[in-house]
Amino acid sequence: MRHVFLVAAAHRTEGEGDATEDAHRLRRMDRFGRAGYLAGTRAFAAAGRVSGAPPHARAGVIVGTRHGCRSAITEHAARLAAATRVEDLAPSVFAATVHNTVSGELAIALGLGGISETIVAGRTAGLEALILGAHRVAAGDADRILAVAAEGVDDAMREAWEEERSALGESAAGVDLVETGAAVLLETGEFSSRERSPARYVSGTLFFEPDTRRAAARFFEWVNGVEARAGENARPAAVTLCTPDYEDFVEGYREKEPRVERFGAAGLYEIAREVAGRRAQAADQLSPHLPSKKIRAYVTRDVTGAVAAVALESWF
Image 1 (cartoon, rainbow, N blue to C red):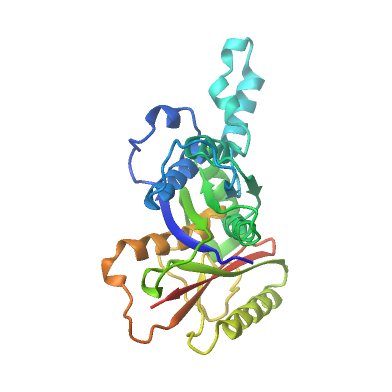
Image 2 (spheres, rainbow, N blue to C red):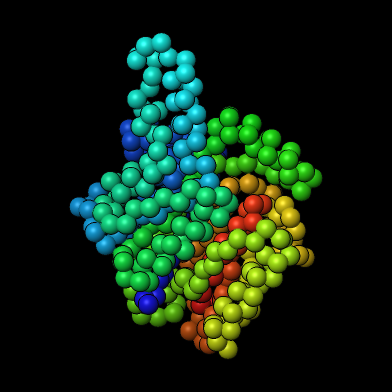
């Protein structure tokens, strides 16, 4: 199996203002499409890759989302129910009523002519996309995979979230829903020194366990295995819980503030934010004197019982 590195990342969240790039292309997308497309193209550009190149069969894209194009589907259904003539319908809305719109737009714009997959799951979807992409690259099915997670949020989505938050009870009090897009570019390769080596994908796990305590025990058993394989020069793994802890999943874990719900984009957003920040900070250059491994585990848990976790390795 080949090594897989996270060579670049980008994220887009609500409140950034109107995007100026690809305005004509963005106009035909729904909010889910724009969030994923902007994050994906920005990650690609951050790696210095050329957009608009001829399709490359060894490069692909995998998208993870909880709701996908839900808003476009509901809008089209409402228009269809109320229509009395063909002119009452909106072709641009209908075109956005498939969940693979983000992967398709990115494949066309970036020349990703290989693997193209979309995972529509729960809060674990973003990490599932990363895990699948890393496995594809490690196995030699692709040399480059753009892993993307996106959730578009409109008024109807916010109303639905208020109902869901109410059902979750006090544990969800004060949790805000935020539209999010995140992307990480995965590639295989070799790097000449640890100082310039990007974060490396180490391991991923997916499982379903409705019981919160058993799920936590299974997660930490996996973390212990990652630490054991990392060797003596690795520090204990740092754990990042990427989703709000509605069930006290990681006992004793103190959540970061503010508490934010990003649905399926949660896990990949936290990874993309840290990878992009690490690349951007010149002060983060490593010392050549006795560098050591840092292992960080990112985990998302859905209240249905699904758990996804990813471990990354970096040098510092």
